[in-house]
Image 1 (cartoon, one colour):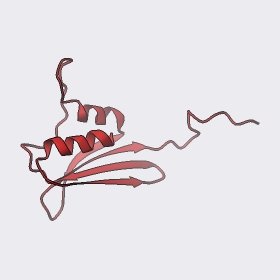
Image 2: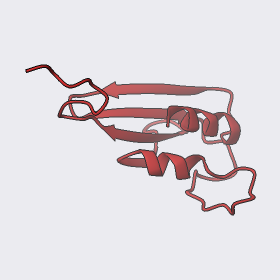
Image 3: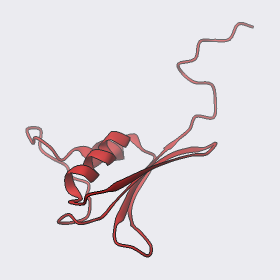
Length: 100
């Protein structure tokens, strides 16, 4: 998810800087990528055909995340694309069973 957001910012924002932030809470992992929003338009979810060479970045983010959106940057030009993952609250499916 992080790779897709960063790649999209580098490929489509037409700016010379971006900022990546990671927030962790007990319930969520949130990734934010801020860019200068100098590209031709806002990020949009696409449904490319099977032979299309690109256009799947936000489709993957949408499939993997529990929520995502594009927001403006208050007080300055730019935009932030963020995505969240819910953290598991129970035992991990990958954790070995505990001996009783």
